[in-house]
Image (cartoon, rainbow, N blue to C red; front, top):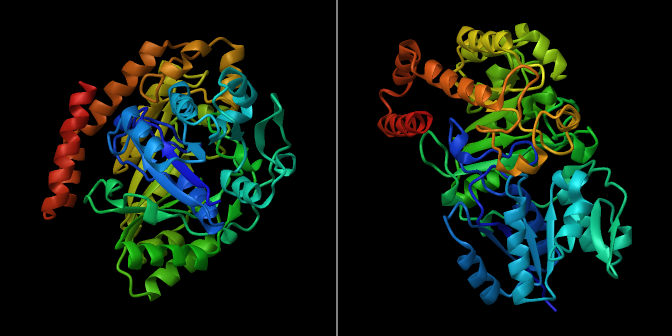
Length: 470
């Protein structure tokens, strides 16, 4: 029998639904809706094995649970996969409950780092959920497809004769080149567009895992802090497929640290440069993994922006959060981007346990000093499974029952010295003061003055952001 699989982002709000970042889209300075890449990979794996798959991103289309019900009735899936976030998980699981009401035999599955900490508890609380993946989803699904006996599948929690069973961890897929390319033909690619020009945006996952152990980030947990890199040729071939098959020429090369392996970056840049493709792209990075040669090659191959998690302007805070960087490295990275003709987008996290008015002031001054092209402040969010969660829970820095009411803009956490309200107020005021600097406004307008479409979008985004902050 040809089984049918429905893979969804439930209609529970527009969020970044990946393991590293789960903020609400409305809270971002650069508001961009990204395609559900893990769902796309899972669909590609099942379809390769002969299953019929359908992907629905209900928040991106502003659809409701009634739309989900119609899809469940018309498509009649045998398996449902849910993309979840920490903030929305209880609402997300309503989708599983609805699916069970319509078809008691459906297999409801979900995935994500959240289940490393709360997987058994969630399975106990919500009987509509049949299985969760708490390790690297793509690798686990590949094994799931190949093995009929669930006891042989690492990285899952499932029900067996009424008992909840947690299998050992999945070690990670050492060669990600073995995965098929994401099932982009099942996505409505026009929903996911570049924020500066409105063109379709292709997201390419270039590696999996992170070796760094920042206390606030769960990125490395799914692969036990190992990194599994795709080859430059494999990444290039996916870019080429997007360009030729789907007419996508704007890309985000997405990884926990795209620039972690210089050899792969340089080889990919060479392949892009020597092809006939005229593409532009952005990537995320760490300030201690770039140099002038790399950034110049990235620029020559179409890169236009690099994003960095700088996190704080206080070296003491950087050390306590185990970021593993020096402020001088951040200064240097932004200066090198400017020299190479690349835009920079920097991110800062405020409200970690040791935050004070003095460290906040250091951060604000540092943002002014390095003068990146874009910047975002996120209030610390104690994601389950992170060291921050354990510290904040032990020291009563947040109310765990209200965790799902939080966001990266209005987190419930407070530091040893500052209240949640003080942190939220600082974030709002800092963004207003920094983005309303006359020098910043003039610099930004000069960059897009002779690009009418981009200028219009910048002005529109700017006014929306100001309305939200005021």
